[in-house]
Image 1 (tube, rainbow, N blue to C red):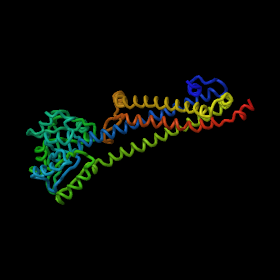
Image 2 (cartoon, rainbow, N blue to C red):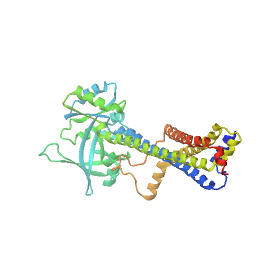
Image 3 (cartoon, rainbow, N blue to C red):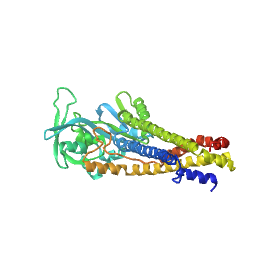
Image 4 (cartoon, rainbow, N blue to C red):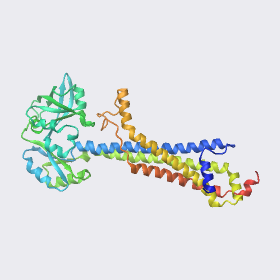
Length: 412
């Protein structure tokens, strides 16, 4: 090892000379390194949390709600031809009919709003991820005669429902002057999606749900699954022009778009704020190295008189800054990855211990804390922190290289 590397490593480690100011400099050096570790760890952890929300929102919530919905005023009666026409578009992956209506679920004096969503189980599995939460055999039973429904877990909890228990559903009339329909429904199963749908979902068979409406021969609309859900706004615009004014088109960007873009914007803002924290930690490296240069002026002057070059003196303090950045970024990445990986299980264990759920699906889009650790984020964050620390050491190193030996040694 050259003298520059040896001295630079010695200044970075715990073997600094215990002379006047040595303990203070050692403490400040470790403090700047700790700030870098903390900034990197927190940024990795928070970005993993935001990535988790974005991933779950995109896969789970947008996998359950329609990418594009096609409605016809007054309902659709002969929908098969339209479904075949829509299936012909290259961006459309699958089409499924649905019946949708709002009502009030009542049991034991408790009444809560509910949304009845009638589906064809076989077709619905091609346009959503519902089969990830409900057994296909259970879904198939929705087509059997009888008013049986699958209830969202949060709604079932409010009404104290379990499989086999009955409750009443009040469906308001579509036209004034007609009485509301009151039906007794049987709970086939309880579904837990971990999303806000659990608060009001009643999943029924297509024909059974249509029988609750004023026009049992009609369906509400068609649900489209696209090859790329980002194409939903363009597809909706195209269908409005193609189908005409008797149809109403909606896409997920109108129902969930604000939430999705809000999560992405929050991710960018949080990332920027925490990146500034890392930048502040890098500036601490500057102040630390400047203090080291001032404290070591006598040693620098002696090295210069012994023949040390300007580049060699600069290399000493560049190595110290690089070591601080390497250790800070490395430890920060390790701690951040550990926190990101263990966060969901830690939160779940804490919720079970306290008997309290931090995220309620009636307030937040999901009822659990997700985490999605992406290695490109880890490499980018740790690499940026290391680069900032290395660049921050250039000025102190340049200042050390310009120390005048004669001026310093005059007072020694």
